Length: 636
Image (cartoon, rainbow, N blue to C red; front, side):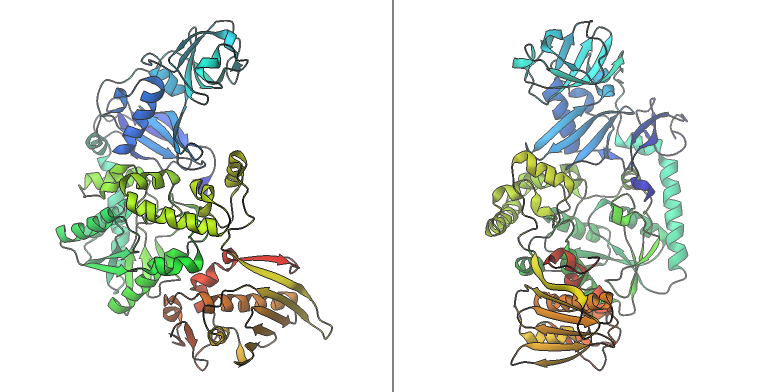
């Protein structure tokens, strides 16, 4: 997890060539470069297309300066924040922070000292001149009486440049410019420096960036290609490439092409892809004469969203239903003996991927081994490689999208969702309408959707803070969570052992006989169809399950009583919320599971190994689907 520690990471900039150095030296002028720092993890990326216009537009809005940001290589470095938050790297310095504000639904600029030193000679507005008797400035709130001159109008919260004699400060407005001269706290000073940073006249380009870093990019390619060859050369399984239409899988295509292996492209069409992505993938395969295999989820998402509710960052049921299910089906049909799949997973992308290895096995996709050749690459290295190898890329990257995926993914940024409303208003309107109807039904209203609270099952601290600021009362849990009421937590039985009793409010979408089938993976089952009751026995524990969701578990220890109770709860959910995705069928080594409007278990073959439960989207998110109340089991 070292990539995600707090602190700074050092990078280098070539002042002569006007761009970032990735290797030891600039390949054009041989300069070792000038060191500068960005915040960790330092997954810096190019600022390109519409992203450049967003940055230039903010500096124009607040300071009347924009031309210097065009036809230059700028970079963005993602840092922690409420939504999109990027450090802006220009001329080898962090000149500001680009931040998307959920309250105003717009981008804001936080000016850094280096930014103030850079633009203050050019600024036409957003400048405050103060007297020389202001004393220590850093961190100080200046009163209106200290102000000698104001250039241009500004609003409270806007970034400012404060000039006090030879001192230049980055600052923020505490009040609007119309109230500044009479306010006790008019301007908040953040940092203080002297002099100016000269704007380099020489223009720079992404072609120049590639030329500066060609040796480094060649070395990255050489190692990755060698890694691919070393594994596939000793493995007889057919090779495939996961081709999502994103930059990382595109870089992997370049590597796989040079590794010398014959491979097929696999594209998972979730039914929620941007039209640009589908077109790009199809045209890329056709142009490069590659065989393209499509795992098509069709309407799987819309068929299941009413059962599960909107997906969330901590409840991504859609990935299993719309990605893993069609993918496992495609692999089983086309590669019955298995396949080695090259994927573009990177450690910098998320906490979940921070420890990935070169060789991985996906527990949800049987018969697939994945290779991760760019796992340690930064985003800027991925882009440098794409440009170096002249690979066509998805046009959406020019539209201010950092990552390309499902257009309604809860893990995308709210700023990107706003972008989607501009580019595809029809897709945005459809999902927005669905979310608002769902929110109203749960009693939360449209603001719950507006501020993005639907994106979590369990709200993080920042969302609680946002709710307080906008005056929104959050429900304790999302309205679509199921309720588990403990009648009695795990406690000693009069007859010996321990028991647990509770009621799980499961929607009855299927006949109780399907619950019985799911319970067969827990233990031996006897049941009464007439009275809708099932008795489950394991080696040392028992469980009674009733059609209304009541469950009574007993076991020799508190842990075992709770374990069989939870297993029963998962079986109830699996039976009633089964998506028939088929992952459990393919995970079952004894072929004990079939699908017939839900799971059907062959008891003679079932070994109760638990593999089907591990691969089930419903069981996997049991704790996100269910909210427990009442008496609780000790330690739970």
